[in-house]
Image 1: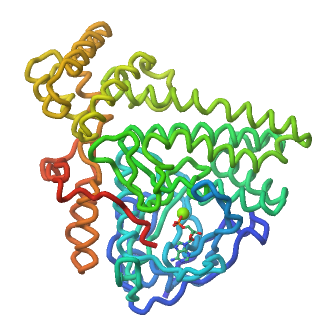
Image 2: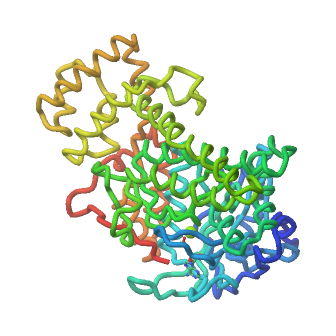
Image 3: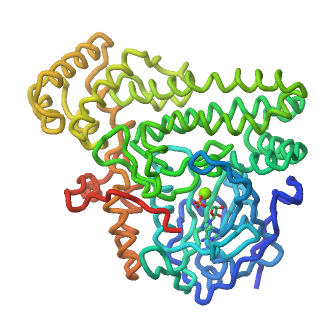
Length: 507
Ligand code: AMP
Ligand code: MG
């Protein structure tokens, strides 16, 4: 039998305190449930590793893995604002890296593969429901064009786990990520006063994510890294807001250096719009509400910057000044991204020009204000965040039929009529053709998102052994901007009885 062997870049790069070698726990009866074939192809993973007799064992970590030395990483973090000096991969193992067809190096991580030295009181296992949720939602995010870790496989272990709502099948997710470096990785070494460890992390992050800074001095590398992470975080959170995504647990251990969305616990896409919407059952104060995410991004970046101080300058005051100068760019950068997203949502600019504001038309603050006024009308009626934008793109804003259609969502009143007039006037002043507007909007405003009630229904079916609804959902979410007619069912908002008021970590 050939072996599945991978190199692992973490042990050579990290001090010994930063990780632990660990083997996956034996799974009593592994079975492969889902394989992401397009992703496997992009990763150059041979079909035999995904379909062969050993596949289920392989993707639960039960072999044939000889020669590969999986590691669990240590990290710390701020959870709901409180520092936690020691967390770490309590139920995840990085198997190693593969090189994609595009030449990028990515981690393969098993999540739910058993206890590690960082498990604390936990069982090291993951339940099928949360594992499937991560698969469905992270792949939906990818299809939306939003940076995210991805999901390669789901396998059940054959074990039954006792969880909050009763017994659940145990499962393992194979996660793919540009890296597993988190803000919390830096906090771990900072708590220990380990400056060499911090420098090692900076060098790893620069090497893997910002190699153009490799040859700079140590302090320049640290400053450049902070600057890049500020930019990536601002861009990412603007993207979450664009599609109505609420991460749910923006603890610093769930924030990546790569700018990818990480950790799909109690996350959700909004149905009815309320800016302070929260789904996570544990977020009782709304710390991570939809409209708090930009502010929390800044807060989290400040925690990262604090860790980097000893590397930025030997003089503490100068280091602080340097960090503050970089952090101070965050609000403006976020606003630039978000204004651009908002004006693209109205069809006034084109998001497909990439993320460089110099490409395509400039988004103006006035356009963002126009969009904010619409959001205000939507909030008043808790209008469906996804469908309202799509309806707005169906016909000219100055046509009576279009005003009526919008009135169905936002109420037939003067405020809406005034807004529609202002919008039509803005489009006319900018000389934007109706077909251009519609095409831009339909590339920016998704028609289908993973709606909570549909995700929950798919997870419930899977727990009963029926994977068909989950597969159907995964397929339907692959073309969120231009879904095939067969995905039309996903556009229906939940009825009152179907509304899912809260999501759970379910760990
Ligand atoms: P999360 O809520 O998934 O971000 O996890 C927070 C921390 O708890 C991380 O250090 C996880 O590794 C750990 N953790 C969560 N669930 C388990 C579990 N079932 N067993 C061991 N550690 C866990
Ligand atoms: Mg986490």
